[in-house]
Length: 311
Image 1: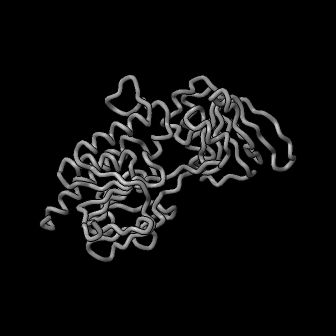
Image 2: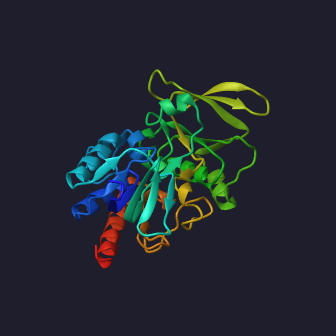
Image 3: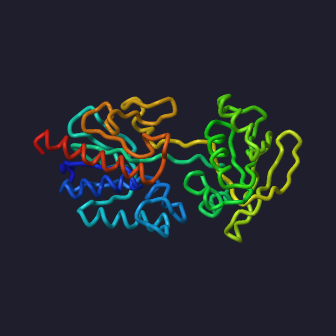
């Protein structure tokens, strides 16, 4: 119905959005979940998840997302394909633009996540979850005793490389320039570690081996000499950052210098009735369990907000 006003719309269908849907559904708020441009979030591109509580043998990322979605649907959550292209938060109810459609809602939970930055190689995309990863905390454990490459030159790359030394026999940090953007303290820490080796002025041309469904080597090119060679590794971790999916709120909601939504008291934005949870506001932890936790918080805050408004 064109004039229908929703109690709550949830932007995003990853761990934070689905947890918010479960909680707001159980509160009989009949949430509408807009699935976004990456339905299921980053877990939908992950293979085995071993650090989510309740799954002692681990669970495949897409299966975990599917279970959470079914649980939300059981409590009355409605799902719709598409992502928000515009939002008017100056009027009540709020008005969201979804393609040619407008949706009105009394409360809004932004759980649109953050997308990892990738190199854009077809072979890289084909091997995500099979030796290509953007999360050392999630996947480093699987490469114990192996040689690993980390791509990047900023603090994110240094953090990934340092964490991976817990598992890898050797970590090679590959950077396209000869100078690093990382802070001095992080760079010094990485340089001082015996397991971390540096390869500068170098870019990845291809990830091998797509046919074997595992990473066996990287085809590298030195940007100064033009030399091309194969570099054997068992995994490639991207450390070139994330892009929070919040561009439609720039100028409306407060963000930090990298575009992450700023929140106070865990999930509150600067506008009453608008909450942010998960990776769109969390640049530090970026874990499934922390995203779910803030999704729970956002749903509880929506329930309190609507109750105070007499809804």
